[in-house]
Image (cartoon, rainbow over all chains, first blue to last red; front, side):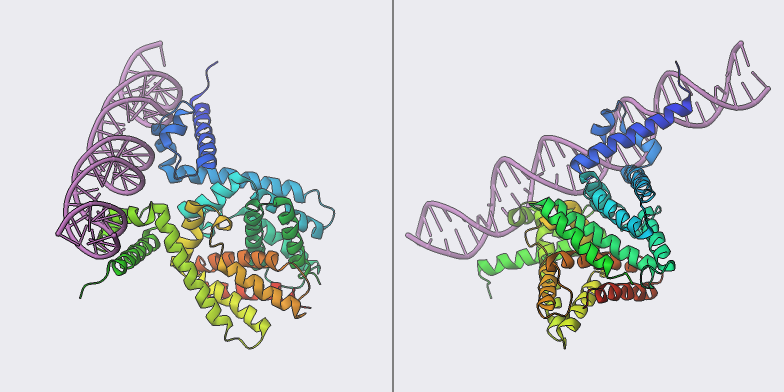
Length: 194
Length: 194
DNA sequence: TCATAAACATACGTCACGTATGTGAATGCG
DNA sequence: CGCATTCACATACGTGACGTATGTTTATGA
């Protein structure tokens, strides 16, 4: 059966994004050869430049895809939590676990900021921050935590979680380090409770 | 007067590091041409490869220099503080302010992790973390803050501070954002107090 | 005084990126 | 239903940067 042209296009874009994601995650953005990973899916750099403009454009597309997945996973997690506070703790935990994944560390947390500039300047601008901010705002309104600036706290906690993930991931004893990090986070979070 | 060979060497190394630091800070590591910034100080890539092995080696040297400066500045700040707790707050504030500087953001916080891997794996391993960790340990021993893991807290706070800096630096109203960030940090820190 | 080694410079090969151009197939219109 | 057009790629090429291999000069030490 023949596919329509529109279907071919989305398929080509998806193949390019998938190939780039694989290569960026494996060897990093700088060492990923466009000739290599395009030919791996039966295409050439021509297709890449046509759809994404340049190599950076492709990185943006890859990060957007990963970011969307992360957001979906966070929503999935928090939707199952019993209480609001528990949901927030679960959200932080899930975020920390995602930040432990090598692909996310490399592409989103290291190469992304280096190539595309600080994440604070990205267009999608971190759905995760928005989610955490909303959670904190709800907790503040419900009187569970002390009054404060939800976005500011979300950003601070976000940074703490990301660095905790790096610490764990590069630790010689990840399990023990993870326990230490989680305990520290709980101490910080408990300090926010009324 | 003739300089001894040893003096010439340290001078050459210093010139290369300074030129690279300038270029890395201005256009970023990836877009800094070795031919360009070596010739800017009257040298060639030959000298660079002789002393630093490769481009990454030079980046390591640049970051080591900046890191040493940061550490010295932090020590200078904390040495002047009245109390231990005040010293810790001052240290956090000073760290935040340093992380606001474009050169540090670009070289140490973005290109560094991307090119050299996660900072947690670096040899110097962040004198700043060690300093903060020591401060927290002192506060814990003195009974000022709740008992807890000093290193874990130091790493979490470090991450929070760095992200706060990015937030401020890329904000449309840096002063207002700075106030929000500092308030949030103080809220977090106060949550640690007994 | 001379041999040696170190501190560079020079020349070259390789490779990746981006652009300019070509081509074939699907689409839209008469 | 036929044809022009546009679009989705592929191909070919130029450019520039990195790393290496190889000089060349100068200080050191025996």
